[in-house]
Length: 296
Image (tube, helix red, strand yellow):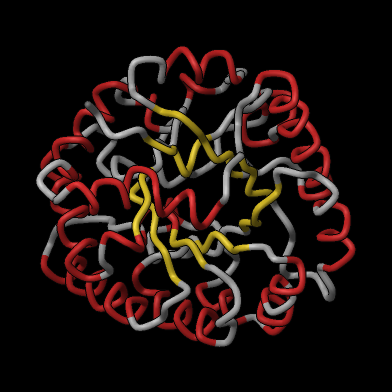
């Protein structure tokens, strides 16, 4: 019997709510995205994953206009109330403001909210940039606001590149009471020795911090395909460095739908994770996400 899966990272949206989907095409780490410049409702997600063994799913913010941070969570909460999906929400809060607490006070009224994400990734390649600078991770306002998350019991989805992991480790180390979840296993952009080496060193530094977890998600982002060999490599190295009890699967749908179907993606992950023992498989497919995000 296949291991039941919690999807720790997926999206739904209405095109009209997302400036990057209704306006001109903008650089994104996953490349051109014309096929998903449309609505992607929960009903389509449920159809996409109907044969994949997903039992629960965690919604992650999708970059609505900053001022609509509460509208986003309200819409997803309403979707869950109506359909039973998703089972937990990672919303957006602008951690660069002087004091994020008024935003968090509003978000915490929604029962499924478990954490927030503000993307901090910056890269030498301008097509991969999102943050205004590489060192926004250690911006004084960001540090001050991340430190406030513990008072709300919220986690922080940490999205950065390997070259930023040292700064990320400092941010995590300053906040031992807060869970940090590394998006897309730290976003490995290539398999050349230097890129892999930087990534492995960064993961090893995070491994020293007990409040860091990582998502086995978005692994097709930089190759624009479902690549079972690459998935196997990243899963294997992540288990070696972080351990299965710090890792959780995420589909990153519908981004990965740009180049694959859901069942093919799940099959590649089942093959990669299936070589580990039953307890490790349960960690990565279900138990870690259950523990960190507490989906209901």
